[in-house]
Length: 62
Image (tube, one colour):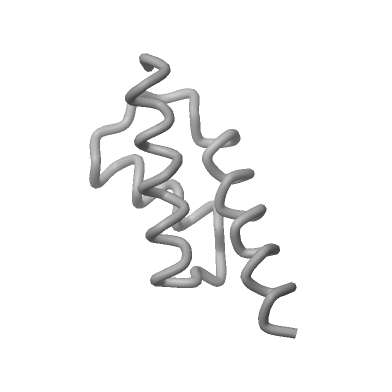
């Protein structure tokens, strides 16, 4: 995945995480990868992005 495209995917995923606030980050990423035809091998990295964003959201709510 190209750097520019990779950053766009991460930013899109962060935004969707803020909107949907998924309960299961792994399942959310798996559905995102399937729906948007993201190349395989990035699931773990994208899951970390979702988990970090959820952590930020939870800490700002408290």
